[in-house]
Length: 519
Image (cartoon, rainbow, N blue to C red; front, side):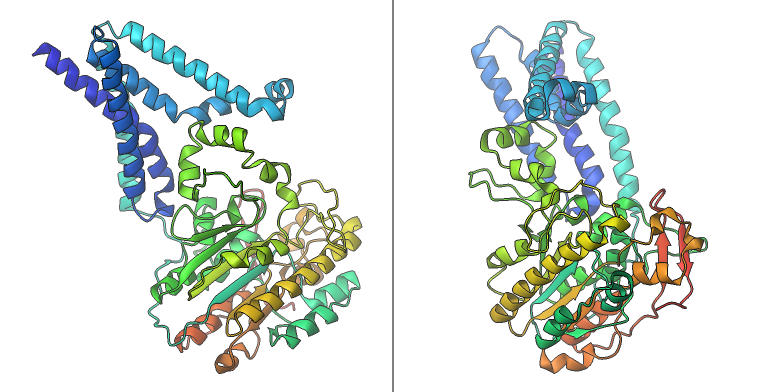
């Protein structure tokens, strides 16, 4: 009976320690997942491997008690998904300088192997002690119970920004919808006034392609995450007095597909295509729920191809670093992350779009926003990876990069229209430029020219002929998808009165609203 109790307790320990990483992963990411099923499948797979490995070890080491083998397997299962913790512990600048970035992944893997083997050996030695098994069970509960309670509270009281439920609309027509967002692209009049640059050839080319270009369009926010969240929620993601701002995690979920616009398209039978292109998690594909097209990575050509969910989960183990080390799968991304973010990457991957529609494509391109990394002819220019480098001395270089963007955008639009002439195409920016030093001024110190440069954003719509009325008038960024959804559904979503806010980059909490007294 005592032996059976130890066996059952050792299995409990194995179940607990094998599940810690998956419970924490789901707690962190549940808002971005459609449910727990994939996490549960991975957990059961790891648990099954641990049990099978333990039984195989017992067949080899017949005199070694199976309960002690289960305890060792529990420790190894826990360590299998503790690789990112080991990597963080050894990621000091001094260690990196000594090892070198080219060899740091191998160094991290070796450290993980040493620590894992050491812990496995120590558990194996001390597993003779009767106290170890109940102690490990208690430790397992200490890991699991608080995380489970935290998850339960989060599930019971989810934080929701501007309720992302689908609108009650039905599709009367189903054109594919392309949303091409050029980060930091200013309006024509802003370019003329502050850069002495006449963008008429590009604007005229858009009009020649049957775009309506809105020459007084404004962004709701001059920060990317807030501006895009405003566009995708068809509202303003701040509320209350004083205003409550959503957390970075809420904004990220909104930008990556959990929003009113995407959910409404899905409810009308559309598939969501997310084009990953640029510099950080903001433009990365969501973990689930989207067709992901990666514009900021070359295909490795290897047999190891994972979606965002698997990459996020396996990055907690050494698997992804091992694959990258032996296949060079992500070297191009790591070496030239800020060289990515070009419009031609969208053009080059149009063939990856679904052959059968309808679909809604969101393609966010980090251009012409700094860093200034392209010359006028689109050749690569050396640039420091600084997203806030609005250096007034670089205004001429910015215009060169914008001309490159113009040329590549025309090529992209020509190809899209040739392939899909009845498509709805939204070409817009998220905010304007900041060469007047707005980041160095207090919010209430922004004069009207400061506001005009920062909020004046490109916005252009190409609608099917049947929806031409929806393209009329003035369309600010916040009202873009009311017009698009009206075209698709035949509905009558009203425009909102434009409002302009700025949120402090220092704390992402301090909000200032400007009066509607500037262009």
